[in-house]
Image (cartoon, rainbow, N blue to C red; front, side):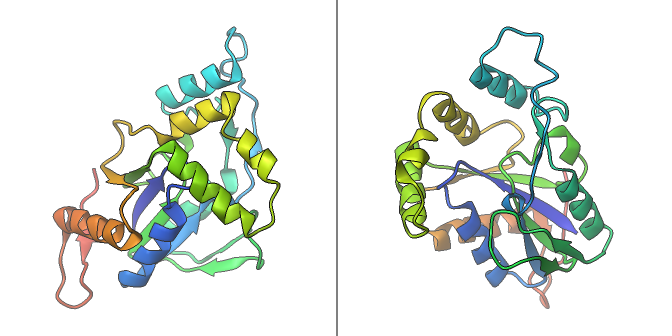
Length: 217
């Protein structure tokens, strides 16, 4: 199994792109970190430092998200390891309706997780793809999506203010560990094509399935 993680701020189009790729590529599946409840740690690594919450977040990102720096997703890590071992999993589905979802191991797993480079995921992700988009566009997309779910718009706007706006800037920033950075202003079809072209450069093509294998870093 080759695991490709997709990162980007809320509204960058991660979910839409991942679902498009699963539809276009044979023998692939998807996994979404929003389906899992994190275990809050509360900054034990930086508690002794006189830093604001936003500064601690910046430091956590800069240090490649050490496991004891902010939060942990142990169930997601276990499920990802199970898939890599060829075992079927059932997701807990935290943020979406519909109950647990069965996911079978496939050649390619597209993981939506903006923090997939955190240390607890090391060795489980083969490639990192980042979607970069202007924050005002991301905010507009985010609000448009939430309006349909009758969410509290003033509360959502607060996510992009003060220290949470700092969070968005940090998450939206391309970093050295990203193997591919996408222009989030493109259409989902163009983005999916860009990913497939990139995969073609690092994967061995098969005339039967279209994809045979990928070289890891």
